[in-house]
Image (cartoon, rainbow, N blue to C red; front, side, top):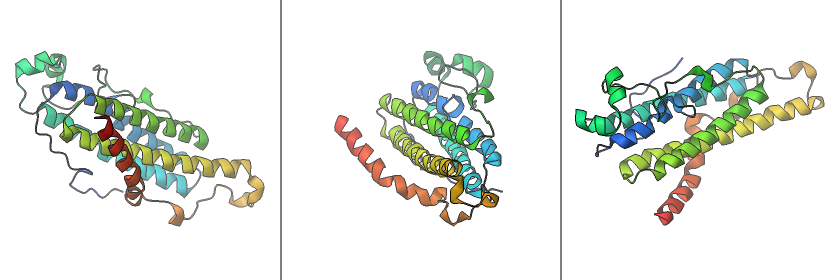
Amino acid sequence: MWAYQKRLQYPINIKKKDLRMAKLLITQYGGSNGELAAALRYLNQRYTMPDNKGKALLTDIGTEELAHIEMISTMVYQLMKDATIEEIKAAGLDPHYAEHNKALYPTDANGVPFTVTYFATTGDPLADISEDMAAEQKARAVYENLIDLTNDPDVIGPLLWLRQREVVHFNRFKELFEYYQNKLQNPTNMDASTQFKPAPMKNNTSIMDSISDGLSSMNQFLNNFNTKM
């Protein structure tokens, strides 16, 4: 069960229309490395995690990815707001307009619609979490590419925040991978009857608590980014 708070995770207030950027940014909604694929990946994989520790983490991160979809959708909407037909044509968005008008629709930057083949579930916790770690790294890379393609601070701010959340998620998945790997490789360290039984939740870090983990590295990235600018 989810409790929905009617606010964005990070404030978005884009003042300048930019249809070119909207066309690029939509990939983080419906592209192979986007937030929709991430949310569905984790919320499906959670059921075959071997204990509550894994189930809780994938539920937390999968839920946060839904919030990231909301952020990306808001950014695309604001970037296209009040666009004229001529501006839509000039940006190469007339095929989108023909099908969807100015409505949101999950595609990548090339207009390829979202497909569930972008993610997998194997039922093997190590295989699935390996995919999850790779997914977070690819999403981070895409956000960095998008940051390189704009100079609008109202766009860069949310993208930097989203990029940093991918780093935090990668680290949480890495911790979970190592936890399960240790349990599999060292079965003598525990009684066989307790292996992969539900674990206490007290050692699981919630998504809200983990936000502070990424602040220092986000500031470092911002400093490096500002130096390059």
